[in-house]
Length: 600
Image (cartoon, rainbow, N blue to C red):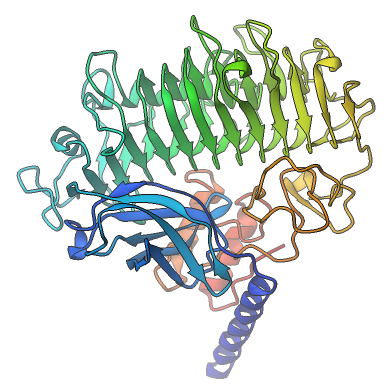
């Protein structure tokens, strides 16, 4: 028996060696997408060091390299290469003694040196909230507070609170919200509510009216960061009249939501950064399809918005009896047309109505664009019980007649408008739309442009139009051959070798692709959201909870992700973009001493 176990162990190690060798052959340098906080103290935190910072990106590898802040090496790496959505994250502490002032962060691994992201070392207090804490304590590590509401009420501009594992705020705080924000920070000293590295901390329940909200009262409620948290409610986050918020890496779900709102809803917000959130199961237990309820909704004069690297899946179980309507909506109810809107690097799927709806926009006042997005299986229908909708990948509309088009480029669209009616299709241009370098792959009976709109409103070049006939008349340089996607039926949209989409695109000034691969890799730019690349992204492992062993706890994590109870973040071992029983079985095998099988 010992010899058999030894053989299995050696086999597992050999497989791991081959896997790592493959991952680092022709390796891509690490790429930082964004950070949770962009400023913080270098003192006053745990271990007599400064703030914890989480970087999100790709090609970090699975073994720690190094992070530097203005040339000073970071300390206390809590996470390195952990899976998040389809990419990775790492967490470190700002070391004591890091000089005050504006600087930048970069990552170095055996594969190279990353790009940099800005960070400012500044003054401020660092607090913690723990299930074993006391609201009568100082709130500083290790004497944490007990409640999130006490942290919220005690914090001032520049302060950060880290919420430890198991902490919940489920009761109503005020204004029908589990956490009502009535104070604020400043541009240089924001207030941050952040999950402690690796922790699960929850605000709201699926039945409370609001999880986090800023109510319609006077006062400064600007410049907050909410990061790494689990947010729930009929509306999990509802922001009114704020500026400078960062909503980063949270898990949103609102299965009972309905009405003129959304799981993430903003009204009259500006300079808003919404990065890396997982928004799922939206209104799918509400009893009917609601035309007015959406997953992510920016309304009434919400301008200067950056929406990137999120996964938005309102109806992941393909419900056709209930659910929110659109995945992402911009609609200025009673206000002016919106502008300076940037939707990029998102994975959007399983929406009954539209994927991205720029309903009331005016690009004359500031760029309105969607790029590097992967949008699939949206516009499925049927019509909501309270009216019809559009059923498209991207909608562009305006109350006026802007002379500047909505820009749609380097996206991959698949199976858009399965409703197959005149208001269904990949693109719905009510105003001019410039489409470049997109792959539009439609199924039988679907259309490239909603027949209710004119194809002449769509201009642009070097798009792949495949699956049905008739590229939009206003486009040029169209390609109509099979783009040879990796496995579109299995929702894998990378380019196979020999794809006609490789090296034929124009330069749209997008420097990286959906995965963070540098563009271009070959003689020219590739069409679609993916740049063809012979390397590989670092694979997940069967140690899903990252405790150093593979056991029944990892199996429980895989089961939870396969059932949809938690986000499918790192249990997708067969890399088909889904967490299923196949992945669970692989973790079970590994827990019994077999190799951790990763990949198709």
